[in-house]
Image (cartoon, rainbow, N blue to C red; front, side, top):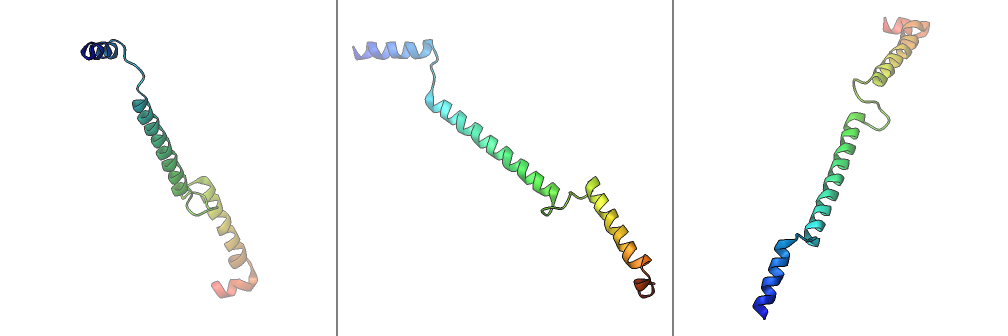
Length: 89
C-alpha cells in the first residue's frame, strides 16, 4: 500500500507542476531586495549630483547662473564702488 501511494504522489507531482510556496517566497524576497537596492542607488546618485544640500550640481545651468550672479555682485561691490576701488587696484 505504501509503495502504491508513493507512486501515485510521484505521478501527480510529475503530471502537473504545482505552486511551490518556498520558491514563491524566495522570488518575492529577491524582487523586494532588488527594488530596495535600485531605490538606494537612485537616492545615492541624486545626492552625488546635488552635492551639498541646497547647492546645484556642478556644471548645471543653475550653478552657472549662481556663479555669474556672484561675479556681478563682486564686481558691483569691489570694482565699481569708489570706496573699494583704490584698495583693490
